[in-house]
Length: 236
Image 1 (cartoon, rainbow, N blue to C red):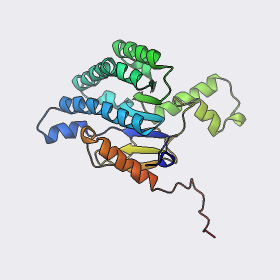
Image 2 (cartoon, rainbow, N blue to C red; image 1 turned 180 degrees about the vertical axis):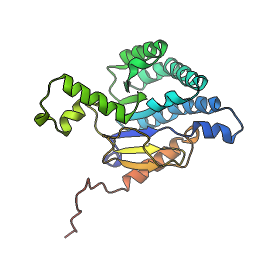
Image 3 (tube, one colour; image 1 turned 60 degrees about the horizontal axis):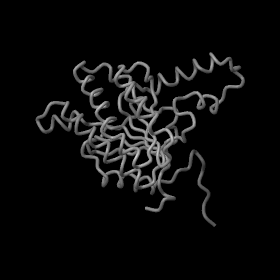
C-alpha cells in the first residue's frame, strides 16, 4: 500500500479477549494473556508499515468494575509486557507514551511505565501510546478543570484550547479507529479526537487480529473518502 494512503495515527480498541477464551473453554485470563502477546504482533506490523502513531485502549476507567482477580491479571500482564518488550521497542526506535489517569494505577505498574517511557523518550520511528485508566469523558473533565485552573477567560476558549489540555495534546487526531470482536461502539474512547475518524469494525477477536487483519482494515481505510463535512464538488 502506498505510504500516501496510510493513516498517520491508528487507534485500536482491543476487544474480545474474554470471549476468545470462553469460545475455547478457557478462563478469561487465558484470553488476556493471548491478547497481550498479540500486541507485539500489531505494534511490529505498524512499525514496519510506517504508521507514526499507534494508540491502544489497554485499560479503561470502566474496567475497575471487573472482578479484582481479573484486574490483577491485567496489571500483571502490563508489567510483563513492559519488561519483555522494552528491548524490542528500543530496537525498533519506538517511543512509549501513555494517556489516562496514570497516577491511580498500582505503584509497580507506574514504576515500570516510568522506566520504559524514560528509556524510549528519544525514539522517533513511531509513538506507541497505551491508554490506561483512560476514559474520554473523564479526560474532558480533567481538561476543563485544567483550563479553569489556568485562568483562561471563557471568551478565549475554543477547540484548539481544549485540545491543548487533553491527554493527547501534540498528537494528530486518529485517522482511523479500529475495534475488534464485532462490537460497534467507541466505549468512551478518544471521544473528542475521533470526531472525524474513520471507524472500522472487525468481527475478529483481538487475540486473532493479526497482520493480515490489520492490513485489511488499513486497506478499507485507504478506500474511504474523507470529506470532513464538506460537499464533494463534481469533477470537470
